[in-house]
Length: 106
Image (tube, rainbow, N blue to C red; front, side, top):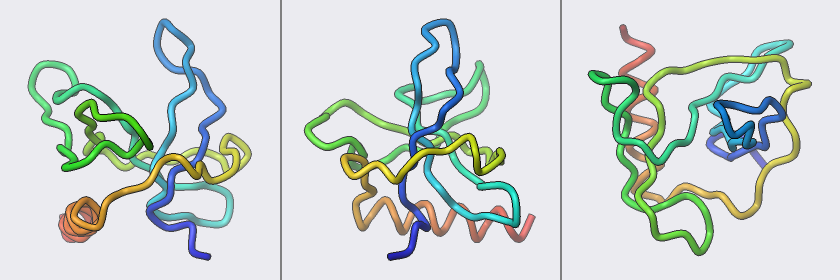
């Protein structure tokens, strides 16, 4: 099973709450995973819009969800197993692939 466009548990705490956030796996190299962050905010800061998802990625969660439009990377040791309760809808997979293709060209 391919782990591309799957969510993984990210071991680093983020923000004041130190809550662990899932990350969408979008690539890898020898030592690092490339990922997009999942958020409930429509913007990053005041001016950068996040990628709006049609469906929340978390099972049984109807709140609006977004992906950060910045591909980040971190050591593979910072990631846990694939999260089974987080999945992209088919329409959101198309959005993410289009974003990744556009990002590669720039």
